[in-house]
Length: 241
Ligand SMILES: C[S@@+](CC[C@H](N)C(=O)[O-])C[C@H]1O[C@@H](n2cnc3c(N)ncnc32)[C@H](O)[C@@H]1O
Image 1 (cartoon, helix red, strand yellow):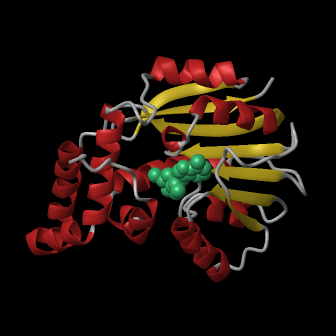
Image 2: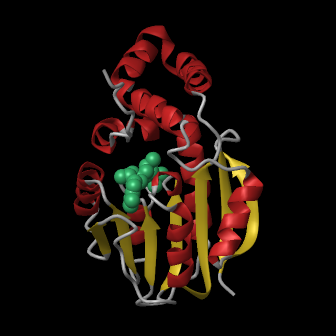
């Protein structure tokens, strides 16, 4: 009998994804760091901004609210993730947020047409991350800004559960912490699947140096780079010459 192949089930993940926002202090800290960086951008009237692999809209919704003069494209190929983003778009009345249900590999945009772009924790899951980076660099206008973040190392699910569990215990006590873990099971299950796929080489893993090399080879210039998200991920703040 053939063993069942592990896949990331983004639909199941979507159901509980925003628990990360409520209960994972490391996800929240990273999100805040990125929103603070986006908040420093100077964006022209009519500019186009992009969030690639935008998930439930935890960044794209902010961008649309922060820059009502711009058009924000939220690109994600998962219907369940996008459904949550649409709820947020409607609740916040954001006509300038467009949700594209497409894989990055299908998206066609004009060269030099995007003034600011982000991609957070999504590149590793794309079919061809290097080609995706190349497309994104082509879309960015010279002098535009981007924030690229990707988990390069193999995720240690137990270590993450311990780190998050300790924070939750001190905040909520044992009973509520156990309840949160039960409810968040789909998230840790998908992270287990991601770990397995990383180990099998089916998802992109990289060192910080490899990540920076891939970003530069795609045509970006790195203004700043560092690790983030407890050392799991690499961040590059980029522009295009
Ligand atoms: C871990 S989530 C990150 C979501 C969001 N950027 C965040 O940080 O909250 C990864 C997202 O990448 C999306 N994704 C996976 N493959 C994709 C592809 N080929 N094109 C576009 N999005 C994709 C998934 O549907 C999922 O929403």
